[in-house]
Structures are given as structure tokens and as C-alpha cells.
Image 1 (cartoon, rainbow, N blue to C red):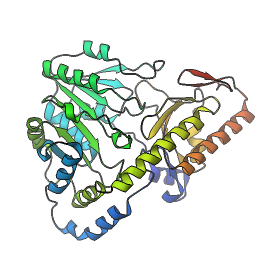
Image 2: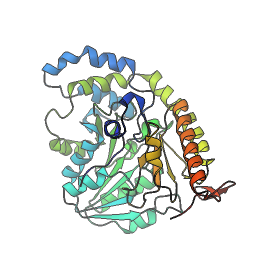
Image 3: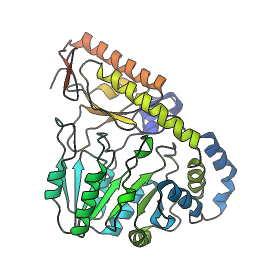
Image 4: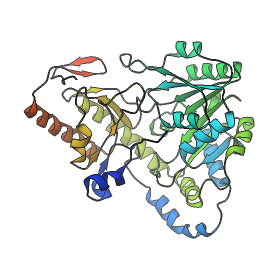
Length: 377
């Protein structure tokens, strides 16, 4: 199973031309503030560390432990959140797995690599992709792994902590596992983390690359009980996290001003971009909770190509189970950049209006708004 993700700026350059810096990448959900200058300075200052093997990340683990109110021994550092998924699944050896789709495709890849039989519950589009906890409860079986992305990628739906606590108990009762992926929680003002509710059968995966704009460096981690973390550590290759990633992560976590500025900007930019998209003709937009927005443009499948011609990338969601070729996800970027995306989509509609004039009424997540409708297949 091949990976299909956003963030393919270099591929876009090869296909459509230009330089990477000329492109606005809404296909990858990375902090629009970019790399913090102090983090960049630290990487440059410590470049000579590359002649040595990296250490065990003790400083970074201590900072993360203090941040989350856990012990350093509960943390396993990984080469991005994607490696954390493979490490966790290899260590847990589940008898089966349950995924709530649409969701992040790396879960399927990690499970397929371990040849874990996997079932899927397709979330209800009309219901706003809310998580069907009663149905999930009925699907628990001995040794099963339940994966919950919180908030979910690409829908943005946020799971409640009480429901997750109940699932952790069900995992314990069935000698199974609950894995909660919290990779996008740092963008929330009050992240509803599962960490205080962990038992020996539940664990959390997190990413530092998205919030701190380090996707090219790769840095993630697992938080679990001491017992679980101890045996999962045996699944991690030696020196899996490079020396510069360890330096960058430790410095990044101490940049409180950057962290608060990001959350404040993201809250305002997210709300405005949602309003602006929802006001456009023919777009069905789903309320965001983090730094990306899911929307549907039924019957119009050339939007990514149109935007690429204007050096803008968005994420086509056709490879997500339960979605299709007219579903898209866009990151929330800086306000001026978000405005460029909205204006480009308006231009797209202007071109379509000239071509075929197929319009009617606009929806946002099932709510009727005055305005034209998109055509259908």
C-alpha cells in the first residue's frame, strides 16, 4: 500500500513549474508561522553534533513530561508520528483492528504491514461525521485495537474524553488496545488530551512536526503507562531520532510566545476561513476544530488543477475511505494567504459560470444558505 499525503510541493514544482517558495501549500497542515527563528539558530549552532550518534533524548523527554504531567519513562520518542504508529502496532500485536473512516491513511498502512485484519465503520456524512460510540461498543472483540484520531483527520471532529475513557475500559476488558492520535491537538486552545486517563491498554501518539513546522526533520512521540512504554520501547530502532531533531524539539517546546501566538492566530484565522468558504457558491463546508477544513464541491473535480495553475495546493480527499473525488481539505494558513485561497476559488467559480452556469443553493454542513448550488454528476 503506497502512501498518499499532502505536502507535495516538490512534485508540484516538477509538474507545473516555479520555485517551492512561490507555492502556497494548503495541502499540508503545518504551522503557517513557520520555523521559529530560535529553533533555526539552535539547529545551525549544533550542526556539528552530526559527527556523533544522537543521545537518548533525555532533555526532550523531561520537557514533554513536564508539559503533559507524566513521567519521562512514559514517553517514547519517534521519527515522526508515522513511525510511532508502526512502533505501537508492532508492539501491541493486535488480533484485529477497527478504524473509523474517513481517517488518516497511515493507520491502514501500519496495520497492513503487520497483516492485522481490519474492519471499518464509515462515518455518516449527513451526521457531520460524528463518532458512533454505540456501534463501536458493539464491535469490540478479544484482542482488538481501536484507533481514534482526535481531532480526526480529515473531518476535524473532536472526540469527548468521557467516551474515550469508556473505550479505554473496553480495551482493558477485551485485552485489546486503544490508540488515540492527538497529532493536531497542539493547535487547540484547551487540548482535550487522553493522557490523564491512560491505563495499561491505552496509549497516545503525538507529533511535534506540524505545530512547530518541522515536517522535514521528523519528530513524534508515544505516551503510555510505564508498563506499556517499557515493552513498546523494544520495538524502536537504535538512534531512530536524529541529533538535530532532538535539539529542535527541546528548544521549540520552550518558545511559549510562539506557542501562544500560533493558537491565537489559528483561532481567528480558522473562524474567518470557515465563514469565507461557507459563503461561496456550491461548497459544503464542515466546521473545523483545528488547523484544517474539510469541504465538498459536488460534481466539480478539476478544482485542484485550477488552483495549481495559480501556485496553490489543496488536498484532494478521494483516497480517504468514505469520501470521493469531490471532497477536499485545506489547511488554515496566515490570514492573507487564506484570503488568496478564497479569491482563487471565486475565480474558479467565475470560470465555471462562464462555462456552464449550473447553479442553485449553497449548503454548509446541511444548513441551507441563500446562494447558488453546484451541479452534480
